[in-house]
Length: 422
Ligand code: HEM
Image (cartoon, rainbow, N blue to C red):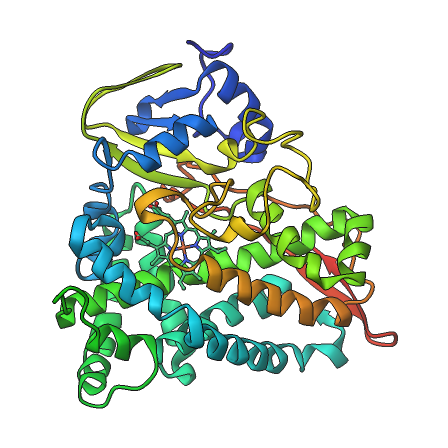
């Protein structure tokens, strides 16, 4: 089914300027959209995305072998299958649930209070760059049991790893830089892994080193890959979701007032933030055989991108899908952070996010702390929200798999109120 305009491209500047504007047309007219420049297929309908993510035999994660593993220094969870995948996934899940989760959330609260303290008298805070990004890195290092005094170094290496994973075309120089970051990260992790094998603590690295499921234990190389996997997977989406939650609440003052009056509504607000503007926008898979969809056929061997943002706005799945509504009856807050989630922000099926419950607890804790402090939170005049889910060949050939947001918070020192500005 051809698009109305055959020149339409997901890689165009026009699409990049406001991707959400194009989603309805993609779902209606080109639900299996082919991008010749990168020979990849983009699926935008909810039912097609769900099918791809659930049919693990037909749509595999083989693409990650070249897209992620060189910088993960070993096999990533998302590329494993069968007994190996479920055993190692269980080890990671245990690090983010039950008593471990309670302990981590206490640490999140302490860290958030520490990070925000210097900004309160100053009355100006960039929610992403001064707070969210730092918090996410610190929290992830905490969970892993890595030394937070090295956070800037870890953040720099993480940036190199993320650049590699999210780029489709890297110049040889950038590729060298990314691989160098990954090698340095690995060199720093290996002695830590060896030390935790001898003296395990309560942290995730110790669990990865000592746990065995179904007789499966992990080598240094596998532990390294899982640590980098968690480092890369946990930081970026969490800080984006926090920023987007504030954006939506400021855009909907009546819902902001309700959440302030009743913080028990926060999980619903986080759930609809994830549905409405999922921070991970594109999830790649490889088709193992020719597959027919209502709008076209994907050939065997092709790369398929699941467009999570478009699927989550499909009117076949959600009523009034473009509306942010913390009371929407078709989402279900309780299940939004579980395997039964209706939205697809955490993916679905075998590789659904292992950090969903942790992400909910982290964002809820931090938002509940921030809301009373930002008692008149607002955008400063001129604020413009820029979604950048691309894939596009920006200068340097970047191919972003995630959405970029910029939200700044500033306020008035004299009344202690804060506002969001650009
Ligand atoms: C709002 C925050 C988050 C969002 C929206 C998110 C989203 C996702 C998505 C879409 C996937 C599926 C990828 C695929 O199917 O290929 C995924 C997988 C994963 N996520 Fe998250 N994530 C978030 C937070 C976290 C956190 C906090 C952690 C760690 C604590 C984490 C760890 C992982 C891991 C290890 C996987 C791979 C699971 C597997 O392959 O079995 N994520 N995430």
